[in-house]
Length: 116
Image 1: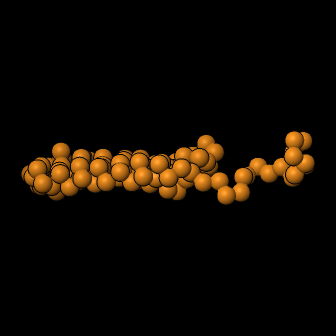
Image 2 (image 1 turned 180 degrees about the vertical axis):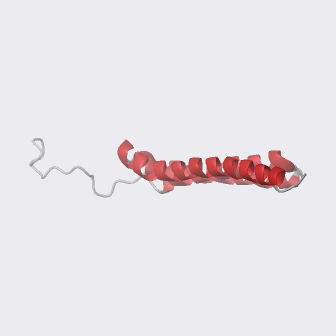
Image 3 (image 1 turned 90 degrees about the vertical axis):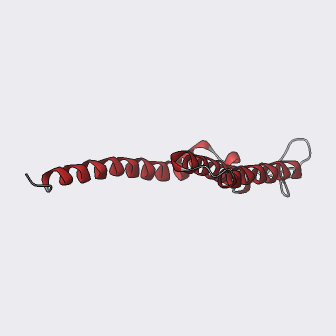
């Protein structure tokens, strides 16, 4: 198949196509800021669930940026994105369910084995 305007072979992918450097610098800056926020959690000496939830939120945001931009997931077809991201999401959901179940089992054993 040829292009009607130029007579050259038509290709679905343009050779040498690159993303603008501005995008990579923007993502690099966002990763730097998110890392600074993550370190500020320790610097502010936050404790307990607030500390760990903030650290996990910043970690997931950084991982999302890296996957979307540097691994080019943002430009993939939706079916491929689902094929790559849904299995880990299902594993995390099952892990959450097992955590709840383990707490229930531990509490039940504590009651049963505590004796009269």
